View (cartoon, rainbow, N blue to C red):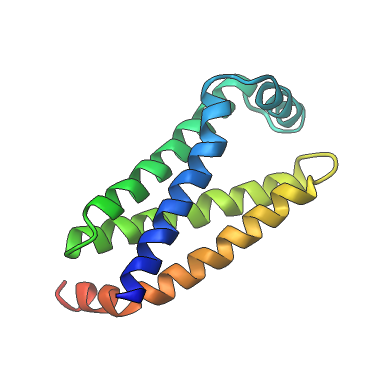
Length: 139
């Protein structure tokens, strides 16, 4: 029971975390627009397209985690959780690369949040490892 509650809480925390970062990008908040204009000076991308793409990706991760909570019982919930974790790790890895290699000076708070949620993703994956093994043994 403790394990299921922990998995659910991690999924909810991941969904809230990703929503918190997706919404300012999708609503073109000033801080997001300025950040992505700064990124576009280094990367050969359109700042607005990159900002909206990142926002949609973060929103997708949040939706996948919400779906994983709603489908928690059964194989579909495990698949959604695994997909969410893969997307989350990819998104956070991209965010860390952006902080260290694109932004002129990394924002410590964002780096710390990424590291905390990457650690949480590792714990999350550890908690669902047996269900994932069973799922893949049937394939």
